[in-house]
Length: 185
Image (cartoon, rainbow, N blue to C red):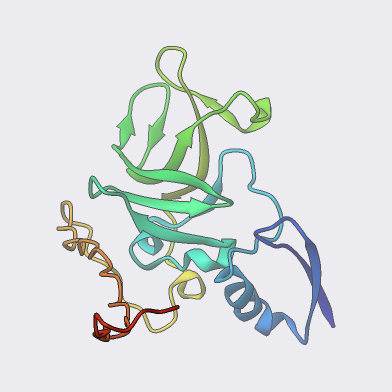
């Protein structure tokens, strides 16, 4: 029997028993749908193959995809929003890196130094996940899902406008005519 510890979206620590290793990812998906997380995000973020980015199952790490009002793809993890960034391949004398897709956010003053990454200027990032190179792992894909096309931005669905609630009519008693010659006393 395996044991996995989750942290709920409200911060409670819960230990769940898992029958066998082949059921582990199913359990992570089940509780990840609730926003529960297990473990900590490694420095530099989780590393996954680029071919998994289109249909990656974010519930495995307790996250969910979201499109902001401007139409940008983002991921919500532990209450923080991480923006999708496409990184071009680098081919120089000093380093050679294939193209990648990274989900990151601006660093906060409360973030530990070991998870911060320097960028141009004084700006720092915190990376949740990076998809680069490697061989596709079907176990990381959304069950029953298909890879999303990687070409260009996708159109965002129109957002429904809120409808103002109409107050229910109030039932009022029908006025009864009182003869003028009758006095109430």
